[in-house]
Image 1: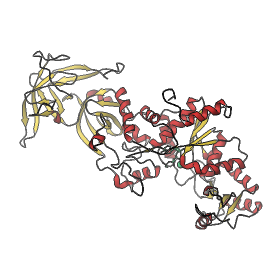
Image 2 (image 1 turned 45 degrees about the horizontal axis):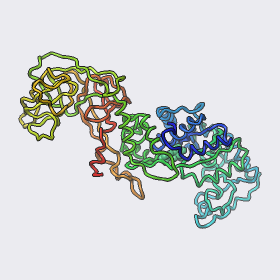
Image 3 (image 1 turned 90 degrees about the vertical axis):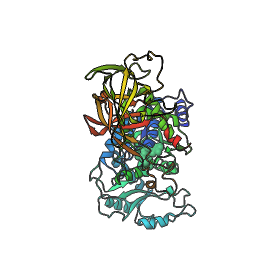
Image 4 (image 1 turned 120 degrees about the vertical axis):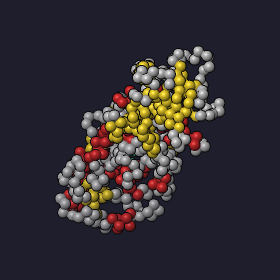
Length: 557
Ligand code: ATP
Ligand code: MG
């Protein structure tokens, strides 16, 4: 993840200059998630950026949980976020940090502002406060509580802290400028009463700092040199600067904004993802259809694929929507290069090789990968009874059909050429079995009569295979912009986003497949064993992605 192959982006240029001109001696960045949901592909962009810059410039990157809101945060999310950042391949400096680690200091700084006459306890209720705030075109009005004395403010804030006031009864506000054109500067709330236990600090506090009051000061405490956030925080920068200018903070972080990642056919908002989970449109945050890092992992996407996607999309200051096809390209490209090959018959049709001895079994060796010699070869038992895909046989077909046709030949992948001699049907006329003959002189060479079969199909032994379930996932949403404008994203959940196939037959070695290890099921796509469902002798395989971009074709693009 260096800039060698790509021109530097604006943040790399800024950092290089800061180092060259001595404004910064060590690069310190941070990734600051709020533990109110699982990380998604959008967060991956921020993680790769923050950890990537620290790595590139010999600095460090903190993982800091921005945990100022006890109402929405949970320990489960803290653990999941740490797992996902590590999985993506990054290490944070020291231990994980929490904004709540700084609650004592932030409280002291709130007192400092009060003593300086720059903060006051305001008894406007939320509705009145909104009214006093003004609008984008009209200035706000001063709160009637704005001129309270320092002593009175100190006493009232003490009461707030001691739980002697009701939630919503009053708040602590910074005294800045009710006529400021930037609404964020119109005496923002810096402390609220919340009589709620916190997952880190327990019952210690019944006042909590606002996100805006906590964020920049936490960066200052940690000595963050480059405080990188998404564009919607640009308007908050004057407020963050005001706090830094008016408090005795140890360092002065500088904020830089970049455009967040938006992906078509995808929702990247924790709130909406949580709704999908809570309303059971999916089977948890790590459902393989989810754009969460844990969902992508369970689906078989590798961290390397996500990192190369983040590298490919780059970092800019202009908002845009990235085609999910780019992510799919990165996933496919990575698996093509690294996933061992295997065979799995999804819709089995029994084949009996009438000229192959009953009870005989020979082991055929097949390459683990077409070019990667470091991937071990596979052993495939070959027997008199086999399975092939139903769709790989037709009684009659034109020349375009390069599979098995009655009276014709086909090559079994990594094995022999067979010929279809006879079809056995049930009473309903369904084909239930094929009687074929095998030419045992065709392993790695053409038949002696010189007639080379046109097609190659996959197969497994009917006696030695892994009975499994295969889950074919498609895009979760069938609309390119499911949550654009006033749309309700739930109306665009793709009803065909999961197809479950049971009774599939995979080659025997897949009994040992580990979750997260991707395989190319030859001629089919990329798959990995599910970590949640299935048993030791009946695994479930998730389709990570197809071999080609079938979606674009079907949509006629
Ligand atoms: P959401 O809208 O999903 O709730 P958030 O910004 O509130 O996202 P945080 O937990 O605060 O979620 O995010 C942590 C960091 O990840 C922030 O610095 C934020 O800028 C970044 N981030 C979140 N979503 C994206 C995205 N789609 N693209 C890039 N960075 C993102
Ligand atoms: Mg946020």
